[in-house]
Length: 389
Image 1 (cartoon, one colour):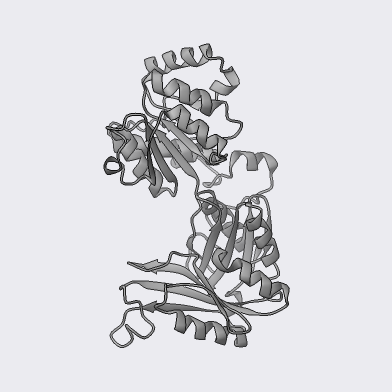
Image 2 (cartoon, rainbow, N blue to C red; image 1 turned 90 degrees about the horizontal axis):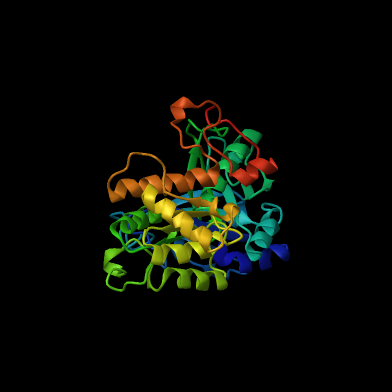
C-alpha cells in the first residue's frame, strides 16, 4: 500500500471511500511483488499498479464493486485457456489480490500507519484475507515495534500475528501467514497478509573470500541487502558474489566510515569481517565497534587470530565495553567446516543475538519458542503468547 498511500490519505481525510487491490501472494513470474497496490478513487481515478497492465482492468472492476458492497474479497489472476489475454497474466505467473474498501469507517487506523511510514518508523499492517467466518475478513492490525492498533477479531489472534509480524518487520519482508481460526499456530483456516513498511536491513561483508560468497547467499535468503567490500579488485567482482546487492572495491574502514556518514548504517545493520588480515580487519573494526548503534559486529579467525586482534584493538584505544560487542570468533558452534556451513553458523548467531536466543537445542528448553528482541524484553511492552495452542 506504500505506493498509493499518499493518494489514499487524501481520500481518507476527505471522508471518501476508495477501493484498494493489493498483491498478497505471487507464483512463478508474477510482475509485481507482494505489497504492490492499486487504488480506485471515488471519482474513478486510478493510482498504482498490481501487474503492470495485465489485470488492472479486472481489478478496477473488482475495486469498484467492493467499494459499493463493502465486502472485501480475495481474487486470483493467472493464465487459463479461456482468458489468458483477458484477465490473466501473459507472463505465465499467478497473483492473489486482496480487494477492500478503505475509508475512515472501515480503516480508522490508517492515519496511524501513515504517520509511522512518513516518520520512517518501522510498522507492519496485518489484514485477514481468508477466514471461515466472513466477518473476520478485512479486519486489520497495525503493528509497531512497541504498539498495536486495531484488532483481527480476538486477543489470541492479535497476539500471535503481532509476534510474527514483528519478526517479518525486522527483516523487511511481506508475506501471507496461516493460522487456525482463532490464531492457533498449528492450524488452518485463517490467512493473514502482513505488509512490512521498513527498509530491509543491511549486511556488510568485508573480505571477498569464498566464505563471503556463502554468507552473501545466506544473508540474501534471510532478507538482508548484502554488500561485499574488499580493497582488492581482483577478488571483489560481481561474478564471484551474485547474491550480493552491491560489490564494492574500497578499503573496508573507509567504505564503512562513508556509509556511517551517509546515514546508511543503523541498529539493524549486520557487519561481518571475514578478512582475518589485521591490515584490513583492525581498522574496520575500530569504526564498527565505536558506532553507538549497530545490530551485529562479528569477525572471523582462529583463537590465535582473535587474541592478536584484541591486542591490536586495545592498542588502538578501544574500551572493554566496545570490545565486548564483538562476536569473535564469529558464528555459533555448529561444527561447521565448509563455507556454506560456516555461513549458516554466522546467520544463526545473528538471529540468536537479534531475538535473545541462547543457541541451544529447543528440545533442551521449556517455555516459549519465539523470543522478543532483548530490548523489548526489558521494556515488557510485547504481549507474550505461547507458540503452541
